[in-house]
Length: 464
Image (tube, rainbow, N blue to C red):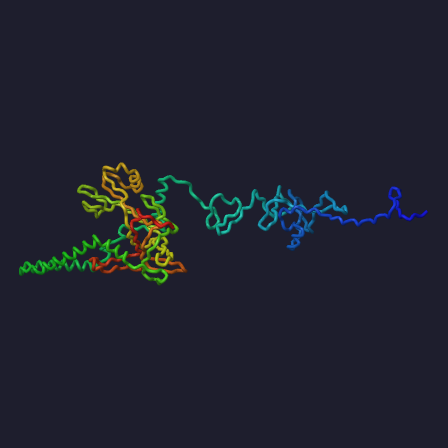
């Protein structure tokens, strides 16, 4: 019989009221394929590899390879394991993990001998590949070296520590044989004899000899001493002038350098002889003073003098009695920079590499040695021993002068501009000071670059 209410039968045979429920659509199930392990190889990265238009690479085996290898399409090894929703086994490509070569591909490692005429594709490495560093000196990761590198990227060799004697001898040898250091002779300085040409000097001597002969002949023949008296007066005046220049000529030259007007490097022309005053900055090879060990110097001078009594030994071949004589002198100069006070520009002063230099640098007395106090200065005896100088009962005096970084110095030379680099170089010809009549000083020739610096041992330098 019929019923007003709809009913339906369940699967177990039971009738229930109501209409049967409409079957819901089953949501689609997402099946994911297991991705192979690529080992960092972009060619094994699936869709990413397709973006770069790369092909699938052949599978690789580890172990010995036997038999010939025939060419053919790339094959893949299949593994039983996870299945997709359709029940089809997932296929994946085997890849080796490990270090990559320079092309981003994993290197092949052979665990045994290869046969069958197979050429190995890559050589087995026992460790990570050593990267080649660029020539810029940039330090990259990797155990390429355990020390600093030079400009070409190769490890720089550094010697081990030396003892005090070895380091001092090496420093002295480096100063003597280094091309960047100018070793100045004791004669390179003020000299009244070098200011006069030898022909003129011998001509004056010949005139005085002739004058004395003529005056003596007239005095003996006619008993007239007028000519002889005139010659003697002139000779005395010339001799006094020479003695005055020998004693005070160096001080007059220092005064001339101090009065010479400073030039502005902004307006100085190429080849112009100028004087520049400014602060010193060291270059690539700073110096160190010989006795006091003052670091970062651009000029050093150490002089050892001896006093000769009546029965004392002479310090040199020209050493006279009851005077101080020079026994040893060490003077070195290198290239440095000077910051001009007038313009603020920075110029390179070429005083190294054997350049001609005329220094007027004040020296201060470091130590006076007498027989009474010779045993109280072990540093001085060590300094003498390093230079193979005797330390017997002599009266000695050690003077030292230097131009250290931050000192104020005056430089006279020729301006040279080369590829926007401002330099001060030695002139090709000596520069003459001219006659200074007010001080009765004869002309003096200044050769090379002139350096003028006061005693800086008690003066605070400008930090740079």
